[in-house]
Every structure is written in structure tokens, then in C-alpha cells.
Length: 108
Image (cartoon, rainbow, N blue to C red; front, side, top):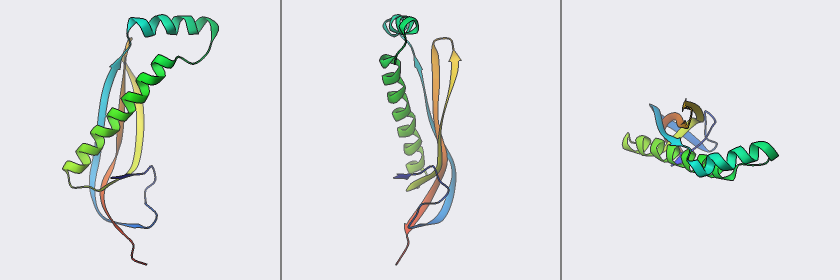
């Protein structure tokens, strides 16, 4: 599955546009991360626990988007975007979305 943030894929022709696909997850903080975050807030620096949590959340959201695209018969996703929002004080939603398409390699 090819995934791009552009509207076209160099070297490929878009045969069919299947439509919008998305995947999302909601991740929550835990006490250990909150304590670390509070300490980092005092002295500065990267909050590794939150960073790791968000990396995993992005991977899961993209995986779910790809599964939805595959189920619809797509072999690529164009115009892919990631978005995050706060659901409540201790939880964030990550959503990956784009346009599912069928592509074929251009003949030279």
C-alpha cells in the first residue's frame, strides 16, 4: 500500500478514486507519565513517555486507515493527513485520513 501526502504519485496513474478513508485511536495518559510530565514542566526537555505514546497512536491510526482502504479494494492512499485533538483532560484522539485510490504503474 502506497501512502502519500500529495494528490498524485510520481510514476503512477490513478485508475479509480474510491473515496475517503480514516483510522483513529484515543490514547490516555497514566500516572507515571503525568509525574514525569510535571517534572519536565519544571526543568524543560522532551517528555519521552508522551512522545512514545503518540508515536504508537499514529502507527495504530495509520494501520486502521490502511485496513479500511484495503477492504474497499484500494492499493494506495493519496492526500493523507494526521490530526490530533483533545477528547478530555487526560485523553487525545489521533486520526489518520486520506483518499483511497487504485493506481497502476505508468508504462515507459
